[in-house]
Length: 254
Image (tube, rainbow, N blue to C red; front, side, top):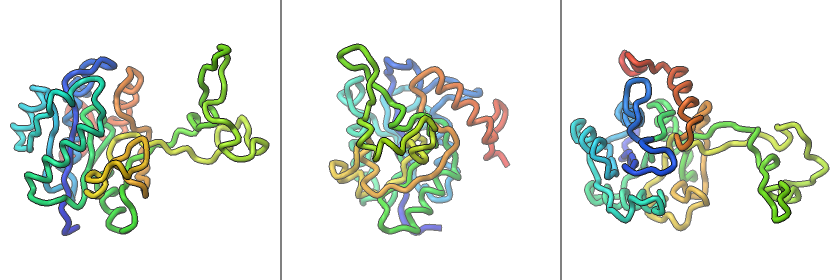
């Protein structure tokens, strides 16, 4: 067991124009936000859970479970507000309540249900084993979505490579085989286990998720994702079922 302080920060606002209600929708008989909470509660390392939200139902549920609620300012609850700005606000508020900078921060989202305690614990253990790493984050392998296959619409109306092939190496070595570029890892947003200093100095991090710092370790997940599209809901339900969740029970019940 680590002697370091580990907190979880769970974020999820009320409004969502892309997928309304995604943070509190019922999934296998439970609200979406309950899955990351259960994962943090059952982690061997998480000492305290903070929930940043403006959602009345999430606030009520979090308070009922004895969690620390951080009411998100109105300016961080709009469609234009960046997740990282809300995360930064939550981090400094949590640090203030702790009276110190936490060693590790588990970043969770209410609409990312493809998470369990084992994934959180693996992330913490990887940081414990590698002092040079800034974070350990869940990734899923989606070779079919590698930069080689990405396209964007050009001015002519034709599809062009999103990234010039030359940026990927020698174009002569590329092929239609989806694995010709090697394994394509995508941060699936189920969790980011980060050193506290990374959130305190977010401007120094690697885009697009700058809170992860620069030296990022993988925690391989199986088809994980956050829910922003309808197809991701079906994918998330399949993940939950594959990991022992049903409408009547969870893998933590034993």
